[in-house]
Every structure is written in structure tokens, then in C-alpha cells.
Image 1 (cartoon, rainbow, N blue to C red):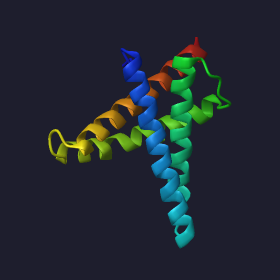
Image 2: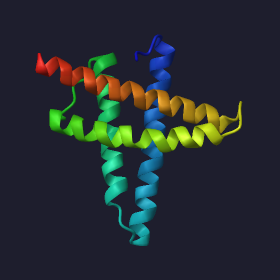
Image 3: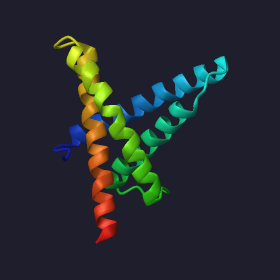
Length: 124
């Protein structure tokens, strides 16, 4: 799956940035309440890695992550897709939420594909 236009790329990057901001806010609120933040922190790290991989792919920005980091992030991001797709299926057609979820799903799939491509390049 490839982003076909610069607009698709920009939309995907913005979606990741938005998801990261929301996750950072959730992590902050959970930390204040003394809740267990392990899962949210891992997801947040996976989102940062996903964004970095897309930026490397599209803008040739280097990132410091290892293949192991990419593999772990890929698993976490792929694990988010079913729940997001479920919420998407239940959302009202034409609603802002449906549009946001559509973009989030697309950006996650693009990041997962970029991680797969990166792994394939390293294996050859």
C-alpha cells in the first residue's frame, strides 16, 4: 500500500502526529492518576517509530531505531488496527469521527507496510 499523492502523505503524517498527541495526553492523565501506563507507553513508542519510518520513507529523514524496534512497533501497530476498524465500522457515514478513523487506519497501514519494506531491504 502506497500513498499516491503528497496530500495522502501529508494527511498520514498529520494523522500520526494527532494520534501521538492524544496518546501523550492519555499517558500524562494516567500517570497523574497513578494508573498502570506500560501499555500506553509502549503504544506511544510504536507510534513514534511508525511516524519516523514514514518520514524516512517519504522525506529521507534518518531515524535511530533498530530492526528489533521496528519489529516490535509493527506488532503493536498491527494490533491496534482491529479495534480501530471495529469503531470505524460502527461510526456514522460522513461523520468527522469516521473520516478521522479512516485516515488513522490508512496511516497505520502505510507505516506497517513501510516497516515490512524496511525489513525486506535489510534481509536482501
